[in-house]
Image 1: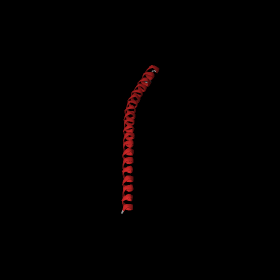
Image 2: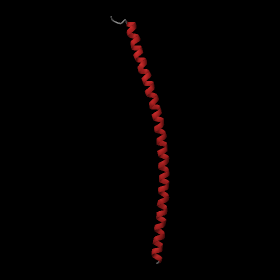
Image 3: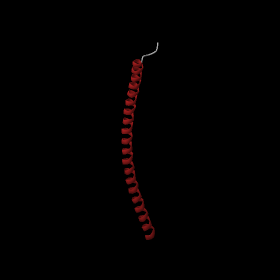
Image 4: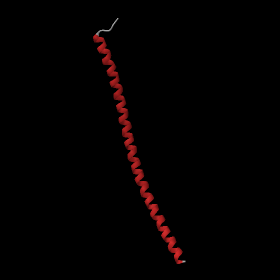
Length: 76
């Protein structure tokens, strides 16, 4: 027996409602993932800045050692 237009409409409405629920779940998952990725990015940016600072400190120390070694070499 064929469905009436009202039954077809209700079936289509239910299908759309299920799809909308699925999209809400996906949207929430993407929001959570995006928030997590932004936090990870912020952490990596801070870590990079810290490493750059440490690298600069080490470079300055090595340069100072080289200068001292050259000074010792010339005074011998």
